[in-house]
Length: 107
Image (tube, rainbow, N blue to C red; front, side, top):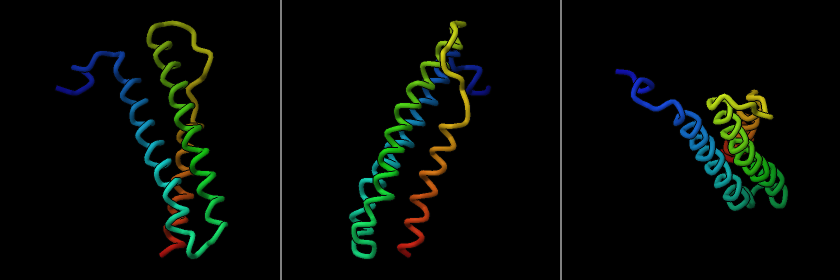
């Protein structure tokens, strides 16, 4: 039996929101740790990509919460003021790319 057949309809947005939160927190941790790892080779310049990743992670947290509320309202048949679009995955991909480039440069 598939998982979706045994899961109540209201739990999918909650699981998705939790996945976005885990992703944002992982990126936040990497953003906070990256200056310590890159300071020796980049100096003060290591703060710039770290700041972008930290601010972007906070934006992902806020946006994922809004996305969860929108999906919950849509499931209940109520109008939602926010469209579900691709900005959240795009922001996450850009931040992951920044972290990956920083890791590659350090190698």
